[in-house]
Length: 351
Image 1 (cartoon, rainbow, N blue to C red):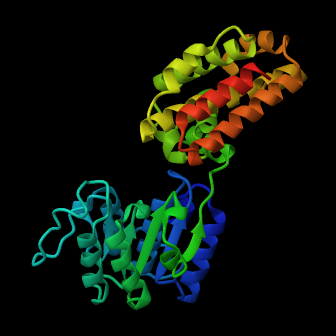
Image 2: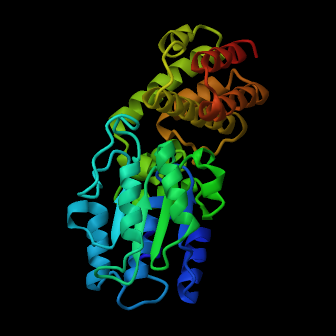
């Protein structure tokens, strides 16, 4: 059934099922959590349940409405008329309203014309289903005029419409809007859940373990990962980490990363590298303190890990791991990427 297909997020699923059973699903919801952990799938599952012809706390997945909403999740041109996903740069516009041509230039913004489109349709009765549902993906990318227009809808919530805001950055949602939404918190998925799911899809167990660890709790990241690229990141991470731990170099790390401008590609690249380093450091701790290495995150590096661990103390490994984890946290908030990378390098070398 619908909610059971979502990996993890048991608390969010249970809350929504209870609300469906009681007929008290909030009109405005804020789904907050990292990218790729199930927010979008949960939103569409809720939209199916709200419009399912059989009713209940789970979509039947068989009726005409359920099938149509699911089709719309995969292809907006085949969607259900009462369920609409709003994306940055979307084409939603009322035919009698002219497009804005200055204040919201750019494709990576949810424009005010899109919010006006939602506002116009939100107060009308559903066309084919029981409820209307608008799913704002990357809701933090609303422009300021869009937030203002959206607030007016929240202040007078339409009775037959549900508004769902999805974001990985809830701190960017104005408090005046967030406070009027029921918050549904989505956390990173446990590595074990991702690993089991990958294996159930036919992935090799060793690869599934590596992908699950390097996914940062994002099932989407694990599913979309290219194994050749993952291996390349792991090789780079191991070579740099080993040089830093031996104090034999690693300066190329600074040359490659410290002066790059902050951007999605740069931060993701750094995150993958540091996540791979963290996995190797955890493996080094295991290799240093245990003979049983069946739980290695990088089992194909077992010989190299044993050799390297023999020259390091548990304290040295733990100190390096703490520095890597601190740098990963800093990626989300630091505005100076060059300083973050330089501090990481210095702390590892000077430990």
